Length: 209
Image (cartoon, rainbow, N blue to C red; front, side):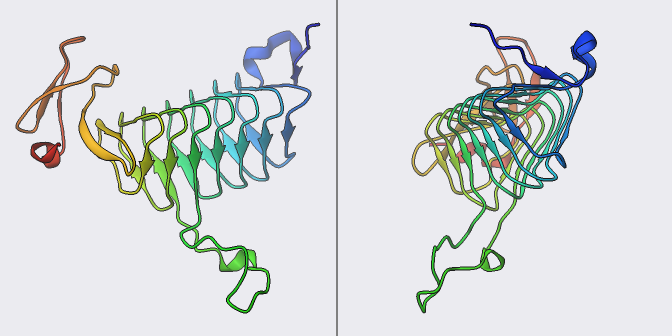
């Protein structure tokens, strides 16, 4: 049985967001033209999602999250308050962008911890970066332009532009081109054999393990 998506203007879906009937999208959320929100996704209050994005099945997006244009958020990803995603970002299935530096359910005296005592930290994911399936980003991080976070990584430190990180905890293992292929690095210059591009990479290149 097919399911008809809910659109604000079905005769020209490209000019309007398309929202699956089972999705829970706050009336105060702003969803851009051409964006598709799939089954059972939850988009909370005052979140802004740009144009031509994909929000996959079972995705959770917390309140006041900023998401740019052409962003892909795959099934089951969780993006918490304080996250800022630039244009062209990819979030893999079941990835989690956290926001509490000192997570506790209770205070030292045993009372329930109030929301105002959450030590929130923003996560900024810059243009074209990719977060792999099941990766976890701790609060307060910056992920650079076209960086790539490996599947299952636990990221505890900032990632430079074009940087590739993997592992638990994640460490820098190389650099990748905007096209996604690995760069050959000499000094601070990275060259892509796949597309021929040349980019400048971080001075940390010499310390790659």
